[in-house]
Amino acid sequence: MAERRRGPQGVAEGDGPERATGAATPPRALAIRDARPGDWPAIWPFFRQIVAAGETYAYDRHMSEAEARRIWMLGPPARTVVATDAEGTVLGTANMYANRGGPGSHVASASFMVNPLRAGQGVGRALGEDMIEWARRSGFRAIQFNAVVETNEGAVALWRSLGFEVVGTVPEAFDHPRHGHVALLIMHRFV
Image 1 (cartoon, rainbow, N blue to C red):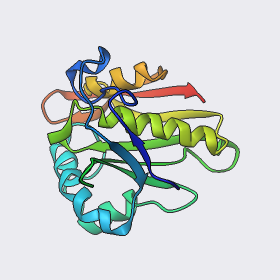
Image 2: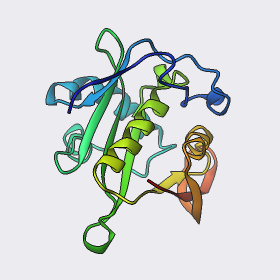
Image 3: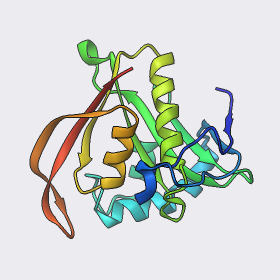
Image 4: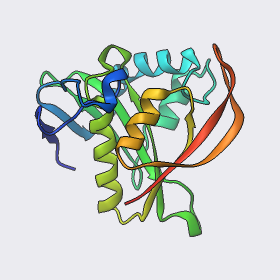
């Protein structure tokens, strides 16, 4: 897959509190490209930080690096990408895949992580837009996110701004370290 570069007009914000207004300035020359094995050392530190915080992913907070790499760095027909700045620094990552096999394989899903030091700079929005385009090109009919933590307000607002709707709520399905048991949202959009 060719690398896609996006300038300030091509990417809006999406990771911080200003995500709904479009107020963030994206990094210049943001590029989304397929992840390579050599990208993992740049992904792992913020992956570990995000998972260990226990606020947005229903992953084992003490997951090993080997397990993290196994579940994140997916190969075809799935896709794992990184967002990089002009210097090639990895700012965020996403993986995308069929939500289910068999009769459910026409619906895509994805997971996203942005380095917390780069939140509010449009990285999440760029990754989301890339994922939607990938799903369209790959022939999926819809996209479903199975477990968006309701207290992850930035993500919920970003996905809504990209056309996703909450189609289901699973009450008290996520044990948040600060808020206790909170809901997981199922979000959906047609491609």
